[in-house]
Length: 168
Image (cartoon, rainbow, N blue to C red; front, side, top):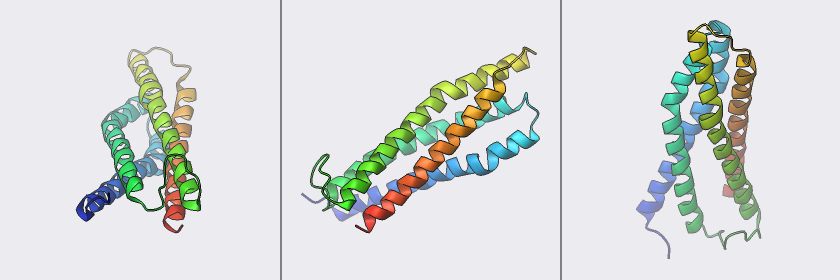
């Protein structure tokens, strides 16, 4: 059964909106905010600054990931190229499979940031506020930057796979 046009249009719109917010947020952080913050903020202020940004962006990011998963599955099920789970019989199916694997990677990286890196940055900020030594700070900041860039790269690759699937 084909869904009504209004439902599919809504799913496409929500999917694109979530993609723009997700990739735009990652690109803004990776290209502008994090490098400028590293270059201009005193070392003790960076972890607290990034923690505050992430605290605001994380709920929005997770909402976007949920929207992408839900609307993506809805769109896929309505696509005439979809013939079943793990039925890799066309370029479209292969592109969608790899895109979904990248999506899972993005969710994993996001989970690592949300429940691993950001809490470590919070602890570093609290120890620095108490004038305690933070020898791991540079390592955690490098990890945070690397994961942010990785997530952005995965998102850009997912967009490329979307283009491949649309032309198949």
